Length: 499
Ligand code: HEM
Image 1 (cartoon, rainbow, N blue to C red):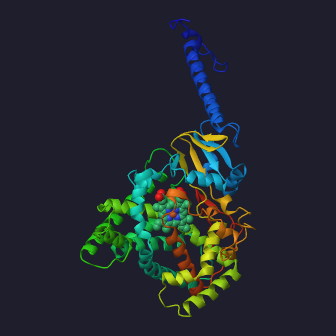
Image 2 (image 1 turned 45 degrees about the horizontal axis):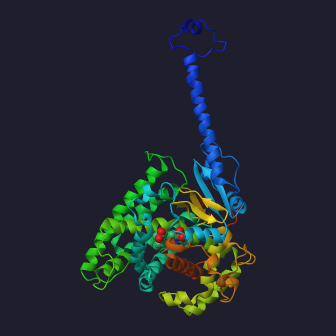
């Protein structure tokens, strides 16, 4: 039909109660648009089914958004259902094709295949951490950078940190006890433990080069960063969005961390002894025998420290909170830990803790390991395939997909950990036992080239905090209907008990 066909009078005379007849031109437009939309939606389904092939997962994906609604409010029950549906299973969120791996074999394969997959963190991570942050390096560049950072976690370095950890923990516990002496009401632990953890991290990283005011500001603002760690965020960091708030928090933290790097360099140049991670780092770089890269700007150093905060604040706080909850719920275990403290510290609880003393706390170390096995602080780590990844004989993950190794099933495998839901520190005391003979299952800290760089420090810190809590305080868990619920902040989990 010609576009000049006159139809205007028909429209003008239309009774509002009678449906109008569309103008043929607009009708064509409508049909074309509808046809395009329907074709795109059909293509979306075909592509999803082509990528998914025989993997368990919904036969059809919800148009456009996929499983977005589920990813907004993740729950352990939802994840467990997904993991139990198969060793590999598929979902789609906003057309991001995602393969979830639940078995130990596939999870480790993803973590140990850097030529096929690299960590992709959550969508907002690059905006928050800055794209030039070392954690986004891949392959050899990542390896070289990381090798330099390993020197910040040597036994010598941990020996410096332990004194700081002890004094910060003592300071916080004294405050906790003051609050407890003023009320009979149970106090929620989550934010209190996060504050202790942040204070410890900042003092270990920056020592006296960061002010009390700075530590408080970073602690106050950091929650905005945790809240922005969603699988998919609003795409623009507009004022008021979670990502915007997180970026502001990062800017505040970076200003203080850069200043600390500058002060540390000045302090080491003046011949002072290293008292924190920054000092240790500057001293290593100044050592004429040091072969690695020697020049790091204040901003680069601050970015590294920020990456440590980012990687540890949520995981370490969860590990600590679960530790407290598990101890309160298991008085027999707490009694054994106290008995061990008596032996290791020979009744002298004012004597400063050393790494050797922490090493002698065999039962407490076993408890911390077991606590994180039963309730892993990190349940999975998102990776992205950089090319088609033949993960199984009968399945290849398409290039550009998300692949998510999960840790829960590995850590709850009954053939390695009989009675997997039970908290049994003893299973780690038997060097010939199944748990110790199968270290590949203990992937609390990941595996492969991106395995947690701070794992010894993390284990040591949780041991130290609980060792001090066991001898300085009596604590009880006020059990509520929500006590055993796990809150998931994307891949991190935490309990929210009151003590
Ligand atoms: C209980 C405490 C912690 C847990 C459960 C934990 C767990 C993890 C996991 C699962 C990964 C990913 C590993 C992978 O992709 O294979 C990781 C990476 C990382 N963690 Fe931790 N972590 C903890 C504490 C810490 C601490 C205290 C620091 C630093 C002081 C830290 C720094 C890092 C860094 C920098 C990475 C990335 C390493 C890389 O990409 O090379 N973490 N952590």
